[in-house]
Image (cartoon, rainbow, N blue to C red; front, side, top):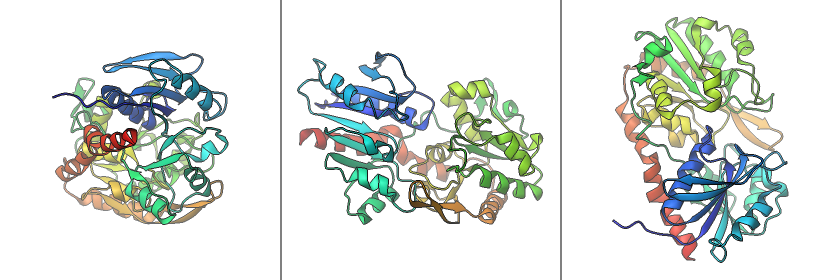
Length: 397
């Protein structure tokens, strides 16, 4: 069957495609598929490349990879890189757009008059004024990642197109082996132990941690007092190298000793575990702990379910939209985010503990309901159902 070709050019402003971040993975998915369908593509990195312009090869062709700038989020170099990209012989004259995949409040000083497609995360309970201001620019077309985000923009009088993030369900599936060993044996966890997994970035501003790390760890510590067979796997950076919390210090503060918590190898974590191994770690868990102050999407929540592992999740922002029938939703209370001038929600400790109790008492083993729910977010399904109709219409207009 012939592959439909689109005529146009897209420059993705985000983490470098393929780096081991949520945005890096989504960027790689997008770039490969846009190239496959004939679009000319560039990547404008704000993390992952600096010091040189590269021509990157993929299965479906090449794309130009521009390095990060001097500003924290590389907004200083976007106009110049766009001008360079649009002047390339194979791009010149084509309809083009800048596609942002990042928080948009950072673009408050961006001086760019071309067309902008903004795949925007909306992770607060109320809409931050800085986000609203950018999305109201006349040259910006919003794309929302979740029904929550779309509803939030509708309430502000802004139309948007809903396109969720994608998960490679051919990789994130029930997986019993990691590095040639049964995964629980590799992790050092007995089959009769109750394994809780938290897969999140330990990145913050040193004060406010959106992933609710302290609340989740304290809740697990309270839960473990009545469930001594419980073990926590923390797939995140242990240090505060990226502005997050010093986990050994926090674990000590909440009363969790080394026998209660498993951490990944720090060097492998920095470069990124193979996705197949990550899928095995997720499969090994009896439940995933994905509670946060707010999510714009929350890819690990879907990846866990795709591996057959139910999740404990927030009941606000995008999280309930990503919760399958076997999920456990926790309650929270409003929490003011002064820098963003909007509200998150902070999870209630007792509600997290209650959810963990329910998960502990539920039948163990693979959740077919979670797997079936996660299929709607398969990356090829998302491309076919959402991206292709949008891009077809956008570049035809």
